[in-house]
Image (cartoon, rainbow, N blue to C red; front, side, top):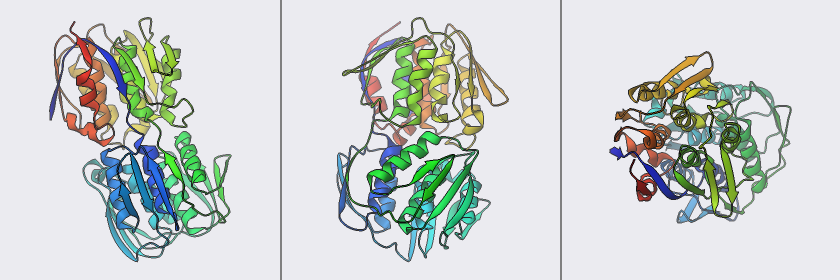
Amino acid sequence: MIQLIHPGKRIGTITVPPSKSDAQRAIVAASLVPEGHSVIHNCGESADVKAIIESVRLLGAQVSGDFTSLIIHGISTLPAKCELNVGESGLAFRMLAGVLASADGDFSIHGKGSLENRTHGFVVDALTTCGAKVESTNHRLPLLIYGKLKSGVFTIDGSQSSQHITGLLMGYARAKLPVELHISEMKSSPYLEMTQDTLKRFGVEMIFENDTFFLDGTSAFHATHYSVEGDWSGASYPLVAAALGHELVTKGLSMNSKQADKKLIDFLMKSNCQVTISNEGIRVDGSLRNPMVADLTDCPDLFPAVVAFAASTPGTSRFKGVHRLRNKESDRAMALKMEYAKLGVEISIDGDELVVKGVEKILAGRVDAHGDHRIAMALAVTSLNTQSTIEIQGAEHVNKSFPDFWDQWNALNLIVN
């Protein structure tokens, strides 16, 4: 799908989708409740959420209702054998790998698209460290799991992701096994705090201190009503667009969220943007903005949005944490460098930093999303400052996290430059 983006100022309101990260955690937790039913409100209809719903159904959970109120009757035992396909959802894969390793059985996890092309050695290493038996070819999907987690004290590498740690926590909670998980080189700790918070709301208590999780094996999942938060990752695009001159109000967010990408508000304010938060939503005035300097190690999903900010902010912006971009839906560092070069913006990599030299005026042309929902949305944000129309190839990939992004974007009032 090719999306044409015309230059000019957009005026209106964008309501962010539910957080697929929050929704997926809640859906899996609800599926592990052995008795009763949970209701998950505001799940959203992203491709990743649909994939995890299908997976928990195959594991035996009964799922009914709609994406506004999802009713889930959980499972007391996992099937002896099951084959799952999580689509392109890395979080679904890594969470469910830990859950499947909590039981004796013969399981396989498949994926598609970019997830098939990524290597998952750190997931395999973590599972085997904790006693599970795992097979794969060159650490790629499909992953075969046929051994059970063991109790003990283990050290898990957290340098590449936190999602596999979320999976282990869910697996150990389901198995009611005491464990001490020390996380070395931990990144994305806010996401692990999200996991801890979600599990607590479903009855599972744990201690998290000094980069170590302690579960005593006594907590049990119980049913609850759960409301999914608005997505701060998806919100980064209208928030940055507002900073670049669009008159947008961004709705649907909680300032009490534990989502890592809420950090964008701090980055914008440190770049001399004025942020106004009210009951109507969040407004950003970036008319006096400066180049941005930010450490994105714990919030790597912000990279595409802040690159869009930097591209249209004259001067040099620097973003730390490039190593977190290698194993995403695309190699995001190289994809951003390649596509923004077509628009006349120089991006370079200096060690672990992405360096962007912003320009007064963006060139026009045809760009490609590289199969990546976040790059597609970042390129849309850049359209305000272009000389003429941009064509975005692969625009349909926004369905992974923000299914109605183009509907909302195209519905905004447009004042042509």
